[in-house]
Image 1: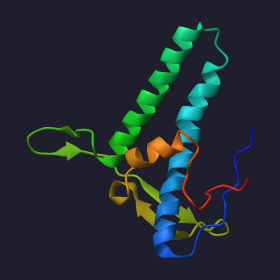
Image 2: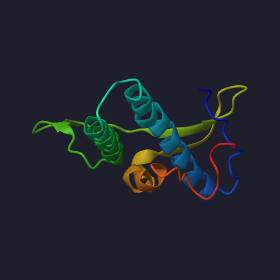
Image 3: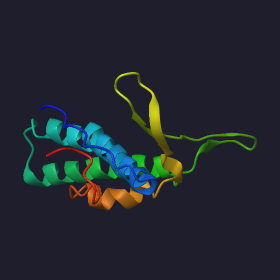
Length: 130
């Protein structure tokens, strides 16, 4: 299945910030949740096992969202810790220049977006062309 085509980004900075977060959510869900679900479809499972597998996929992806939001405890000792930071970047295709970037840790929250994203809602401004 071909990848969807990115829609034209909004120009207003506040709209662009939210749009970029929704685009990041679309990328993450397509690369994790939808990929796992497509692999699951190839397996011969009973309905109960299939439903349990779908729930496990969602639980794992939601755990990733919590990690990206900084909700999960970092790997730490008494002196230092390791955490993750993820930046969504809008880049120009011709020269790879970063046009706008959002540190997802400082966005509206991947976990907040999750509930709409699993229903196919990626915001008022479309992130992909239909």
